[in-house]
Picture (cartoon, rainbow, N blue to C red):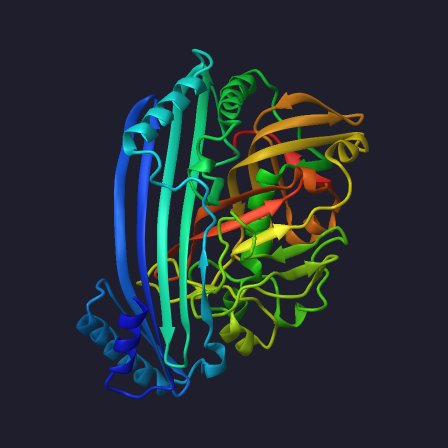
Length: 479
C-alpha cells in the first residue's frame, strides 16, 4: 500500500507546502443475543482515502471511498481547491511544523486472533451467557453482545512520513434486567461496552467469565429488594468502572484544546478551562495524577502515532493536582501556545483528524482498598455508570450508577439501589482524599465517544484505581 500511495503522491499535478494521504481499511463484526435469541448479526467493511493539502497556511481535505489512483487524484484536487479558497479568509493558519515526517509502525498485541471462533461458535457462547444471566424468574431480559474490529491505516506525506498501524479491538456487553412490580433494575458487566480492549478473543472467553455473568444476574435481583440510596452529603467511593465516566466527562472533554479554542462550541460545547490555566490551575487535590498514555498494551486507544503523524508518548496532563497539558496536537498547541500531546485523531477515512482523547488514566496511590475503606466512618460506594448529565462547559455534572453499598464504620454493609451523585468539576476533584494502589487499578474504555461536525465516534481508554471523595452530594431516585 505504501508504494501505491507514494506513487500517487508524486504524481499530483500541483504544488503545495505539504500533502498527506491517509488510507484506512476497517472491518467490524457485530453479534447480539437477547434472551437467547439472535438479535443482531452482521459485518461491515469500510475503506477509503483522505487527502490533506496545506497551501500557504490553509488546509483542504478530500476523501474518496476507493483505493483507485485516479479517484485519489480527484480527492487531492478537491482538497487543493478548498485550501486555495480558505486563503482568502486566513482564519487559522496551520504551520508546516505541525506535520512531522515520522516513519514507523504499530500493531496491537493479540494472543488469540479474532477469527479463532466462527460466527456460530460466538453466537453459541453469547446464548450460554444469556442462559447464565437468568438466575431467577425475576430476570425479565438478558443481553449478550460482542463487537470485533480490525483496522489498518497507512499514512504518507510529501515531507517523508511513512506510517502503518494495525488495530485489533474487542468489546463485550452483558446485562440482566430484573423486575418486581413497578421496580425495575439492571446490572451489567461494568457498564455499557466498558470492557473494551485492544487484543483478541482472549478478552472474550476469560477464566472469570462465568463467575462475572453469574454475579451480574444475582446483583440485578438483589437490587430489587434493596433500599433507595439516601440523600446526604457524605464520603463517596467510586469503583474504576465509574471512574471511567468521571475521568472521561470531567477531565477528558474539558482538556481538549479545540474546545478551549471554541471550535466545538456550536456542537458539543466548550470548556471552563482557559489558555492561561495551563501550568497554574489547581484542578484537584495532590492525590490527582492523570496521564495521557498511548503505550499501554491492550488499552483501547493505544497507538504509536496520531493521524497527522505525531509521535505518541506518555505525558502527565495533571500532576499533584496542577494542570500541565491539554489534549491536542501540534496545530492546536501552536494556536493556543500551550503544551499538548499527540492526540489529533480521526475515526474513519472520510473524517479529518481533530483533537480527541486517547488513553486517559488516573494513576494509582499507595493504600490498599481495604485500608481506604477502613478509614471511612460513613459513606457510599458506587459501581458502573448508568446515566450522566454535564453542562456545555464541562463544569456542573450529575451521574447515576447501577449499584451501591453503604459504608459504615469502615465496613461495606447494605446494598442500595439508584445511587446518584453530583458536583462541579474543580471542587469535586479538589475533594479527592484517597486513591488506592495498583491492586485495584482496572482498565476500561468506550467505543463510542462522540464529537465533531460531521460527527465522529472514536475509541477511548480509561484506567483508574478506586478513588475516595469527601463531602459529596448523593441522592436516590431513578433519575
